[in-house]
Every structure is written in structure tokens, then in C-alpha cells.
Length: 575
Image (cartoon, rainbow, N blue to C red; front, top):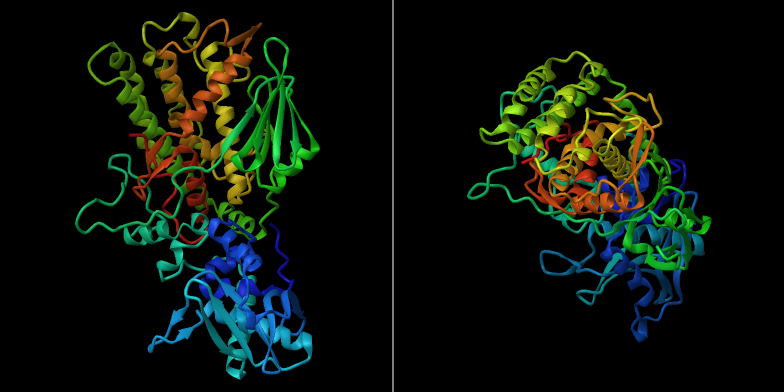
């Protein structure tokens, strides 16, 4: 959502401001929305509420605006009381109680009601001396006097809101942790991750990871350990819809995507998928998607992505227009050479250490596998020791890659047929079956990271490690480095060792190149999607997340590197 900083303030944004300044900044400045079931329930309340007989409204959902105050909004109800107009607000929750247990409005509710009262006064040309807030959980009403003090409070709130509109720096997280528990934007804000960082004293931006010391892990459990509320969802709520059939067509029927394809007998098969059940639509090859279906996906924030028959990411859409303030902060952060180098070192350290741990685990013991891996392990350790002294991002590119890919074939069991064994690493195009699988999996990983980056609001073209030399967005390539081994290489090696691939059915062989067949793509997609649903404990929070959620979390932690809370990105490691 793009926000006009010169436009009038929404009254509801003042409610957010008094609740939490960072919440105001997200919603009013950056235009970020993340409605939850509680938010929708609050909206339904305004439509479903039945007033008491003696409180029948003269007007419901009345739109009001004022150029003088610079405010616009929609008051829930306006009623005539004792010959004067009164503005009413309805709230689902409980009221605030004073020292004598008297019914009071919460500060955020009060400022919202005061704003509606002054707008109503200007619209009607009559003095409005009172506003009321109805709290339905308690079945009580708080009365608010619209006097000079109330109007002064409103002026100060508007002034503060306009100040925040002009800055690119997000306000700090709320001091009151209880405010975050029910906030719909907690998964975007990540307040507990920032508080945990402060608790661990990770404020030194210049501190680099040491190849010779253990990487920081989660706080210890037991007495004295700090409880971390689970504010970032552990599981994704929706799934990715992959369309593999070359003759498939994706259309729309109401709020449902309709996928029409042919089976092996050339019979028409139709699948209907409600839009609220998917987070992305991925078209593999020559499948078609209608304009109506694209519009539905865009309106619901569902990415549409296209991959070539050979498994290369081609393009993608997004329903999220540019978030200007986010992009300005990202540009400012990633044009600083010291920041880029610091992040590149941390990223490569995480990648190489993960590769080393995986090879050590997969070749444990004194058998022939460890013997075959030993020279490669030593070269990887040597590369790891050089990460922290690298003088540029370019010198980090490809670090340890040759030794790592040389070691991978040693992890294949003797039962694996010769056709499935790689002859080195070949990319464009892949020249054997194993490399075809590697490339296809990396392309699926690219689509997953790309749509998460766009959903978070980051600009995929502004990076700190890779350079924009190809059509692939460099920031996506950066973040992929964290997940290549964990999300694809490990499950791929396991599937090859379990003989899950048919050397004939799953591959299409052409002179000088190898691609996956339709059946091979289906098998690879299933393997990748199952891996995304597996859980891993994040080393910073100690919270178990599915890998699909882990991608989004790492991208949000990356944004914090230039948004006031550095030191949290790229701490994830393979077990």
C-alpha cells in the first residue's frame, strides 16, 4: 500500500498512535496491514451491533472530514441526547477502570472519540460536548467530555502523527509488552525479537562472528531464563499451488481459483481451490492463467510466479505496491559499504558453517565416506577462517563452494545408480540428472524467497552480497544462501539415497542438457513442499518454526539490520 504523506490523517490512525507509535508508523506511514480474526471480528461488531431501545442511532457509520484539523474518518454512530449530538464508538473489549473502579475509556479510544466529536461539530455546525465509547465485553459506556483540554490533547496527537510521517526511522517497540500480545502487526514488528536482542546485549554492530567460537544460541531454559511470548506464527496458514501440466488453465469463479487440466487419458480434470487457502500460485512451463485470476490473486496478496520448463524462475507478480519509507531505509542501509560487508561476512559465515556441519554429520565415523570427505572438509574449514578478514563482498563470492560440491557425491550410497551421480557442478544448463535436480530445487527456493521478500516489503533489487548481473533479483540470491543446504541439498541427498528417483521416468534428456519431466517436477515439488513444512528451532528466539515461516522471519530480521536493531540476521544453523 502506498501512502500519501500529505493526505489527511485517518482518525483510526490516531487510535493506533496512542496505542503504540510503531503501530501508527506501520499502518499510516508504511501502509502495512495484517488483519487477523480479531480485527475482522471488530469490524463485524460495527455492522452487527443492535443498540438499546433508548439509544437508537440517528445516523450509523457517518463519514466526517475536516481540512482545518486535517482528519478524515467514519464515526460508528451519532445520536441526539438532551438536545445535543453525541458521537458513539463501539469496542469489543473491556473498559479501563479508574482508582475507584469507575468506567473510563482507554487513552487510544478516548482520542479517537474526541476526534470524531470535533469533526462532527464542524460538519453539523453545532457544539458537540460529549462522546461515548461502548465496551461490549463489560456492557458499559465511558463518557468523554469534549472540552478545551480534550481538544488540546487531540492537537498534540495530530502534531506527533505529522512528525512521524516525515521520518524514515521507525519508532522503538512499545515499552509495555502486553500491548504486543494482541497486536495484529506483531509478526511484522517482531517486538520480542528486539527485546531479546537487548536482553542478550547484542548492540555492537561491529562485532563479527568468530569461526573458532560457537555461534550464539537461544537463551537457556529453566530458572532465570526469560520467557519469550510466541508472537511470530510458527506455521504458515496457506499453501502454495503448483500448476505443472503444460495444458493447464487457471481461471476464476468468485473467490475461487479453478484449475483445468488433462490426465493421462486426455480427460478434462477440474480442481477448485479457495483463494484464502493459498499463499502463491506457481505456473511451471506453459500453463495459462486468466486476467481475472491474476486480479483475484493480486487483491488477496497472493503472488503469481512463472517457471520455465527447465526449472528457471522467469517472473512474478505482487499485490503490494512500493512501500516508500521501507525502500528508503533499505537503500540508505545498503549503500553503506561497511554495512554491506558486515552483512556479507555474516551471511557467508552462516552458509559455510552450515555446509561444514552437514558434511560432518553425514560423514560421521571412520568409514570410507569420511575419508573421501576429509580433504574437502579441510578446505572448507580454511575458507571459514578467512570469512571474517575478507576485505570485500566480491572476495566472499563462491567461498568454499568448489570444495563443498566436490564432497557431495561422497554422501551418495553405493546403491545409487551411476546415472544419478553428478560429474561436477553444471548449471546453465545442467548436464546430468543430479544437477538438474539441484537447479530445479534452487529455482523453487528462489520463488519462495522472492515472494516472502515482496510480502515483507523489501526491494529485491537492492542487495548486499550478490550484484545485479542477471535477471535474478540479487537480494533474493543473498537470502537463498542461508537455505540452499537446509531446504534442498539435505532432503535431495536423502531422497536420492532412498532411490526415490527413476532415471527414465523423472528426466528428459536432450543433447548436452538434462531436464525434469512432468513426473519428475511433481516429485521434486512434493519433496520441497514437505521440507518447507518441517520445523526447526530458531537459535535467537528458541521458537520452533516451519522452514516456510523461517524464510519470512530471516527477511524481517534482515530489515532490522538497517532499521534500528542489528545483529539478528543469519544466526540460523543446521543441527
